[in-house]
Image (tube, rainbow, N blue to C red):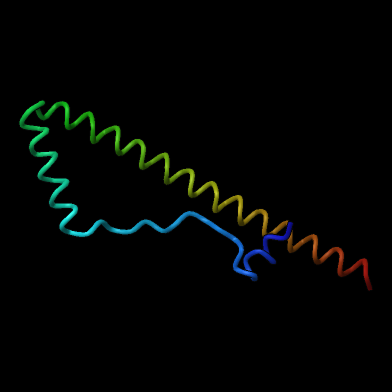
Length: 89
């Protein structure tokens, strides 16, 4: 398996970049949360948002870790290619 070849041949997949929600969807979401807050109270919404933030932080860490692993794998592959090129001389 060669990560460099996969990237070159456009076979490497990674997480999709985060996109901003459309304004109309954000407005619907805000309306929904306002209704939930009215029905269940602001403390419930605060706990919910705290949990959402924790989940987003975890996703961010996972994406960072995957990027770091990719970088290390690429460096190891480059070093292997360099060593095999030296041995082939």
